[in-house]
Image (cartoon, rainbow, N blue to C red):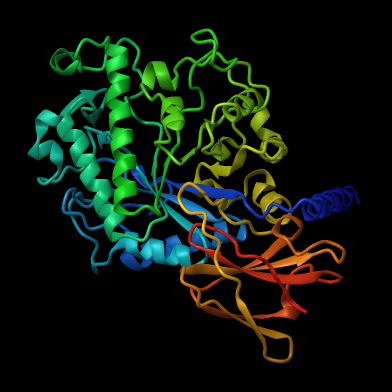
Amino acid sequence: MKLINTFSLIFLCCLSSISGNSQSPINYEFRAVWVATVDNIDWPSTKNISVADQKAEFIKLLDMHQLNGMNAVIVQIRPAGDALYPSQYEPWSEFLTGKQGAPPIPYYDPLEFMIKETHNRGMEFHAWMNPYRAVFNMQKSSIAATHLTKLHPEWFLVYGNKKYFNPALPEVRQHTIRVVKDIVSRYDIDAIHMDDYFYPYRIAGKEFPDQSSYLKYGNGLNKEDWRRSNCDSIIKQLYETIRSTNPRVKFGISPFGIWRNKSQDPMGSDTKGGQTNYDDLYADILLWLEKGWVDYVVPQLYWERGHKLADYDVLLNWWNQHVYGRQLYIGHGFYRAGTNPAWRNTNEIPKQIAALRNYKTTKGSVYFNSKVFEKNPLGWNDSLRNNYYYYPALVPPMPWIDDAIPVQPTVKKSGNGIIELANFGPEKIKAFGVFILDQDLPAELVNAQLVQVIVTEKTARFDLAKVPDAKGKRICVASVDRNNNVSQLLELK
């Protein structure tokens, strides 16, 4: 009986939250998962599985996240100066085939495959690249003869058990730009995404070995400002390259969760982080946001609420005050489930989501990492499916990229409640949205709740009888373009 009462309470709470969402529709929210390929963390599961198994694993991964309510995946396609796609600049990744430089057999293009499967589900594909890591493990990594550490050893520095591209070298920046331009030119991705590894995290007692580069290129700056200027340069050049090559593609950064502590800078957060973006990784993310060199930022707030040194709530508030008009998503430490008393609390992730929704400037969430979802830790998958992500959401549009509103769909009723939709407007669409609306409210997006996303480029059919939660509601439809702009709603009479 106690178990039954517990489930009843959970169910009532879910209904209450869903009801609340229907009163305040969340039609736009970024909901994504990081899919790490380095060291086979998430995909593929091992280095040596067959092509058929690689494809089956990725499809299963996408289906799971779609069921959980996600609308995007952020997939690591360049983990260490290598590629999970055919590249003229870098060799095939060892994490795909077991041997760096070896193509998949039978041959296929994993990136093309992943993008197509992702888009077929109405989800965005963000191509995640590591900017500077070149050899993941100097003792164990497979290194091809065509890897740049072999062709241009002078471009690299050893720190710990890894090799890194030297951020100071113009040749390194130009190479990274070529790689990004190639991807943006050839693939139908939605964004280029970079993580927190700029200059590497400090190793106690070891200085990053770039003194000779500093003496050559320092140009009168102190070493810290010079290192930051190197990162500033690559970010600015990458942004300009993406915009000039394919203006529709977004550029996002996922920095470490602390820019600076207040003890280091009056603008800093009330935290006591041992390392920071600005002082240790030399990533001045606030400058990049202020200059408009990135479209979105995903600070990795992997700490719990109430953490003594880096409180999630404190950092959430701080980042909301420093986003400079760009989009802010929050990175959640899903992988931390069960690791300490705070992360054994079933409410930790739900309350983090609830907290960020109190800020108009926060536009969504990203979770690390994908494989953890397979275990449904602490029932969080269920919480997303049945509560927080019960209704679908579109990725928030970016008006500085594209603010053109698509034309309304045309509607034809085919009998038996079947509705045929079409859009032959000048702008390519990616979906039709189906919305429900209370009887006494104007048919406007702010009042309507998105309940279905029908993926298509021109035409689609759907059954009125199968529209979720439509009893006693009016039903509207709209066109959705590639930048997630929504047309005016068209009410079905």
